[in-house]
Image 1 (cartoon, helix red, strand yellow):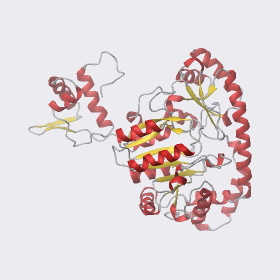
Image 2 (cartoon, helix red, strand yellow):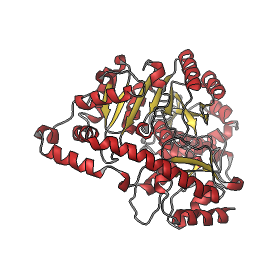
Image 3 (tube, one colour):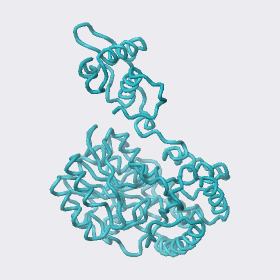
Image 4 (cartoon, one colour):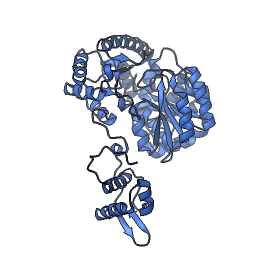
Length: 467
């Protein structure tokens, strides 16, 4: 509790004051909540009672808490707006995942973004999208003006049920709920399953927005090391015994950021552990269309008994069409649908119509086939260029857009990112993906965004400077 990077001049009283303010900022203490007694807080903080008395006096003077004679001390400050930055670890801005995302989404044409998580616009099926838009403009006016139905467009849900059958997941259209994005699908699952304070397991490393989303749900997030075959099962089993988690969030198919795929043996053993621990699993299957052949899915082995599957088409069709989906067991659909209505009402009906039209256009199948070949070529070329700089991929992925790479000589990836940013190159340092902060010398590269030779010139310069 007392671990801190504050200056050495911080007094014990300062530390107690900071601890209370942090709890208020994180909403662990809300207005009207009673603080621990002076004796109890002193024991918990391993300080003297006089130190806590002085800290409480200072907090009272600032209007953070108030004293009620004979009753104790209570939070008096108004509830502060939620700040994810206050809930997470303190990171340099060039490493902080939310800062990286803001830069990448800023549409600054001067920036090169080899660390981002999406394809260039020129790689997307723009002709199919334009045909879909023209067709919808000529169609039923209700599709242009009305709310979507609670579960979402039936035709698209039927199509999705057929598509996930190709991954071995048996589900009817009634088990599919359309959402406004893959992120909203995951958010919906968290709202449905979690209470503040519940523990959630994540891979280490994993997609950095998992961390931010789970912090927004006030979950305790516990990392489990990820291997080339899936999560480290010994560590996974220990985490189950020690933390009794409610949920495990992971990628299906192609893992982000490592590019690894789950092995069948690990999948079966993981599900056995989950069954014994009564653990629910959410698989994010957003990269499904990048695979030539479907790799193992926990949802397929499990039959959707304790696994939910979610995804979207933002990586292969359009990030501007905010349309995702969530697939779950029949008994959970009504509750999930009610939550969706409560948080987004009718949903993105127009986007669902457009996605359905684009997916049923004959051009989409050809598009993803060409995309897989193009990514395979880009992976090989990018890997060769990185190796020339001494940057070695952790593994050679069989599909997808990511390479997870180690820098030479244990160089700090954050230092490299800071230097590259001066030359308008936005990198993705490893610790942005690692809750345990054990990926200090790693970077994630998006091979589709690495065609510009300036990236490797800047990277070479930044590595030399950091070394």
